[in-house]
Image (cartoon, rainbow, N blue to C red; front, side, top):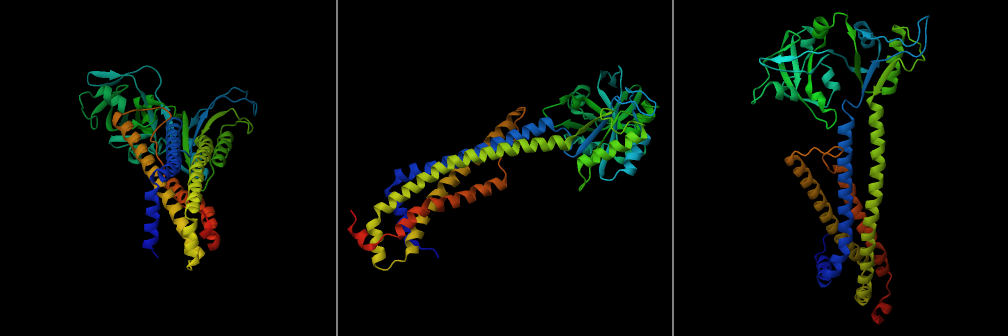
Length: 416
């Protein structure tokens, strides 16, 4: 039950010792503020590193043929076996645990992509529509992306990068619906994408066309340069990688132990390494922040001990007229939790405000800082910080409160 008299007494004590209370509470305020800022900066660092390093879906696996290193079945080492369309079909049909699959071929040699009297040299890639679920850092900003119907009907359509759009379609002209000429073949632009990463910005200079169209128009040999898959839920990336390599090695007569026949980039491995790195950083931040906060809590505890000493005679009188020990303990605990919580909430509020302000400034200025992006604190960390505050306040007041509860009335009345 809310005890108005008790709270009035607490506020009166604080009012009489404003400077002392402020100086004590500042330690808790500063500890929480530093903890929030460190967590936000750590998250900004993690966001920046992930943005720079992780260009594709975190569960993606890319398989690229290189040269064999072991002779096998009478064939020498040093061979290279490009994939075929039947290899892709076999992987799709026989390997469990694949969510998305897409090949990637690209035009080689010198040529110009033309739009009316403007032209430029850009990368032209053939992919399935699933590719854009793997290349997650590419976001469609205008029109649409390639879709399964484009693949099925072998449409002559294309999706262009933002830098291609800027170069070929000046003065704000929308590229969607316009026609580009690629190696004397006309393609209709269906969309524009941007590349949301500070790394590999040249990918915004790409043009994508449906893979079946690419094969029919530009690649009569039907070879496949590389392909990528994503792991379905419940399947481990390492296991999927092993299953795919085993199958393609069998199909291409490559020694089962030849680990150099393919270059494999398993994004899941890289993602887990990044996560482990930042788990260590977060633990370090919590240790530093908790250490700073502990210094503030010790200050609150010391001040509560002084409060108990100053009010020894008053506590003795209370006990002499029948006050229960719990009423004495609760009074000290309430005051301690109140001071700690108010100071901590102010530190939490200011910390979040500063992080949001930095975020706003970075976005409004269009700043693109490598390895640092969107400093923020997640909801879970904020809740943990609030719980720490309440528990800390209780701990800070516990020893002084127990000391007050054990004060003997006769000794208290004789105290100076």
